[in-house]
Image (cartoon, rainbow, N blue to C red; front, side, top):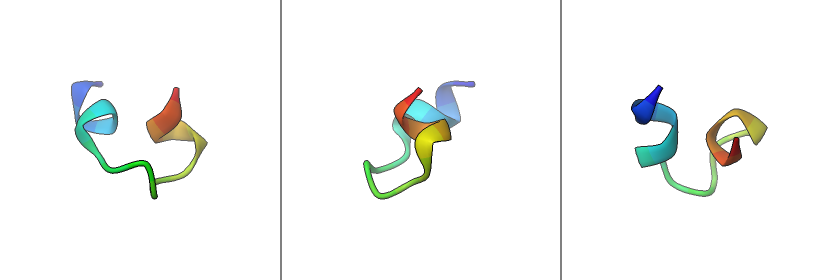
Length: 17
């Protein structure tokens, strides 16, 4: 989801994906 992408780089691998 776009939410994960919008999250900062501090988020888990989910955000980086």
